[in-house]
Image 1: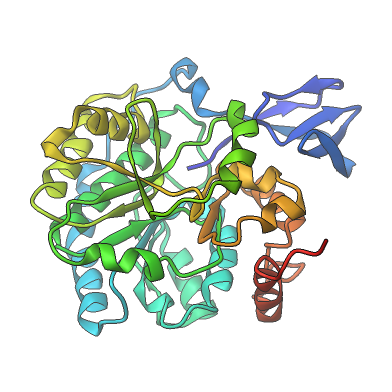
Image 2: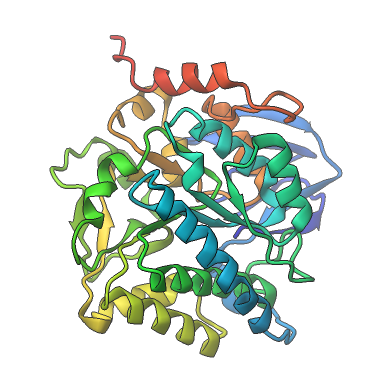
Length: 376
């Protein structure tokens, strides 16, 4: 979930180091790898990125967790998941809880993944508004399963650390625990990512048998930017790397193979989230992994397959070195418009200029360029 706090225009103000922009004399100046690459028009007001390190500093007013609203979704989610599984379109379900402020990024992701065969039939999207589902059906047809939570008060972006922001994380975790209980493997993702290949090609074999897999992506840290280049060029043999005690995982993307071990793990994650208002889903996921809860060994995706938002800061040539890449999660930046901007600079925003429709030719051409041989 990504949120923004508005501030008045200030000259010569620089945001946190993990911010993709600075403000000078009323201009938003985008940066990549320390170089100024683009001027935006003069602004009267700019967005200050609030990252998770601010979480504990945010003053929160008490809002009751909408437990009944989430529980109401359970039979509908079960029905949708079982329908997908019976139709046999793939070896897993793709799931996302959508902040309705990110519909444009969702459309970009759907446009991106339309190139994968029999893909959209395996997707479950859960927004908060029925109007979002209605609009998706109009634009994309009946293949995608969209189930609206219909819980009031959660439309739009929420400040990181606010109680509603935390509730959204808890709702997502609870919905994932429901999915785990249905004995269907799933891949939880966020729509601010670009997919170069269908993850089923590599993850599908992990759903065979009773292997208690929970696997995630290495968490992005702004101070790791020098390491990002190193990780991009690493050649790894295995898809999954063993989770190390000094490492941390993002909560998304997250792959879960449902077993008698992963089910209590996910249930415990939800219970701890409800009891600990000062901890995020990532905090608790990593606590449980460190503890080895339910005798589960957490695993980490290889950086050659799933990479974090630092990838968007690489030069075009460095990006092309990630030729085996499955997806790049745009989690280094906050705010829908900022994410769209960096995707556009990487030629990975596929909607028309007005954002009204998918430009299929752009998807095929621009995705292919990342797999073309490097020129000397």
